[in-house]
Amino acid sequence: MAQRVNSNSEFSEEERHYLRYLLKVNNAFEQTLNYKPVNLRADLQKKYQQAAEGVDVKKLNNYLRRQVRIVHVKLHVGRRDGFSLTERAYRYGNHGIYITMKEKRKRIFVSLTDSNQYDRQIYIKLYPETGGMEIKVPVDVKVQKHEDYTRQVGLAMGMYAMLTTDEGNVYGEKLGEYQVALADWIREQAAKHRANQGQDPGRKKYAARKQRMTEQLHSYINKELNRFLKTEKPGIIYLPKLPRPGKHGGSKAINNSVNLWQRGYIRSRLQQKCQEQSVKMVEVFGKGIGTKCSICGGDGHKKEGVFTCDTCGYQAEEKQNAAQNAKKRGME
Image 1 (cartoon, rainbow, N blue to C red):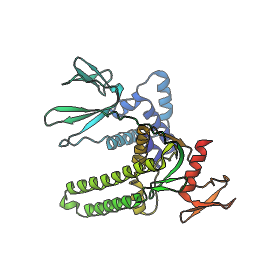
Image 2: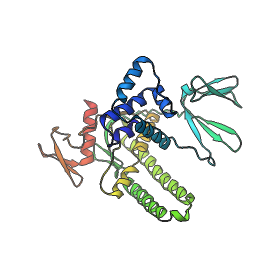
Image 3: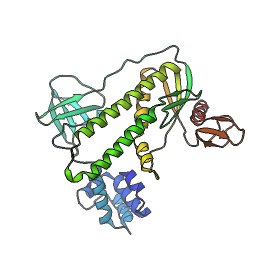
Image 4: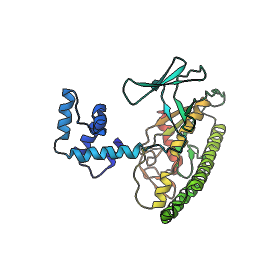
């Protein structure tokens, strides 16, 4: 919600301040969503009134409610669904589980068929047809220790070549092909769907093929991550911390490819595989990592995938230079 407020260029700074205040103070946020007057303790009420001065409160409150409806859509009644619970959102007792509700100090009790108890995040799978539910629990994976995994490796992540090391080795060089194929197909299907909306076209085949293509992409990512670990044998890897996704301009085809970039999935899978293989993953400061020379630290420029330092003349593949900078920053 805060990200939506911050990215809306139509708001003045005063309007953003008012909306941020509602999001920050739980009671004010709850009362606004329920069309109730905001009533807080004296010090908070004074700050609320100051924030509300000079802005259209009704318009902003309606905007906030509308955004909540967009983000928290109603579940489809004909679909099996579920939700995640952190370890603090449930407790065991009386041969069952107590699940936290939205109402304060209230829990729903559900009797269980076994006596298993867990202390981690769980997933509740709902079966509306039978009135039942299932608890899904992450499985502990045995951590492996490799005596020969001792190298320190710098990495750079890309949209077309998944990983490039500081020595120039590339893993997942076909990532771009998979992602562009998926993005092009989705864009093509979206155009067809808009053209045939009056005929109410079905979406089952679309959803099934999209899932197959996404699974193929994920399978390729996992295969290449495994190859990276087995080949490089790292003890520590250094990876630039990526900025949050932003808005893009220009070509819609490029925008679709960027939006479907699996960088979050790649990072989470790499992190899990590193944990399983006792490899330490270190995130380093990412600002300027692709424009600084890894040899002298001077500024440089990139052209046709090659980085050239304007100070010392060093040349390298741009992702390799970024990976070298990641390793350099991580070891400092």
